[in-house]
Length: 200
Image 1 (spheres, helix red, strand yellow):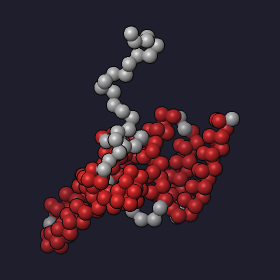
Image 2: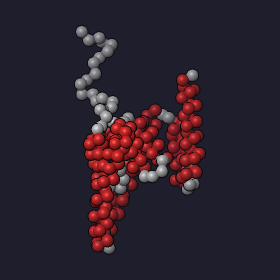
Image 3: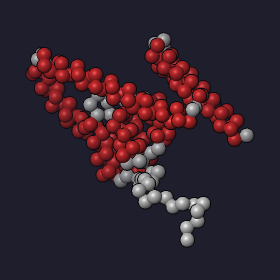
Image 4: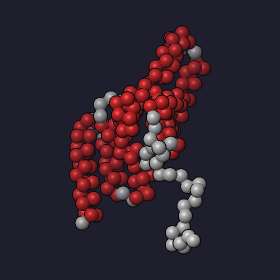
């Protein structure tokens, strides 16, 4: 007989995190992200990792991407390496990075040859302008979705740091490395003090 105080979980409720991916699944997932990622892969990476496969929670994705943003090199490539290594070590990092970079290298090489031949056509220029607008819209959409954990938790400290970094880099045009050298240690100290205060 079921206890009224502990109702069963509906069978349709999804698990918080699914099974960790294998090497082939890592390669395939990141290859699909790269092929879908016109104007940037971040939108599709978050959708696949968090929403579709549930390999990470939104908070974990934000933390991992923040680390990759600080590391040298393209952020999404760093993300593929860190994500693949997390689940399958060095082979996983190589599989994810190969899936991310392999298909676009082939496609871009072919497109570069075509653009060199037909790049002066006005219709092609208008098409590329439209694609760039769509890419900006996708980027804004994923930024809003990545902010949702902070908004849901009403994390005033996190939102304040976010606004300060945006103002410093986006509005005041301060150099990104200088801003990061100040913002990252400051955010670590503030987060540590806040969590320590909550635990006390």
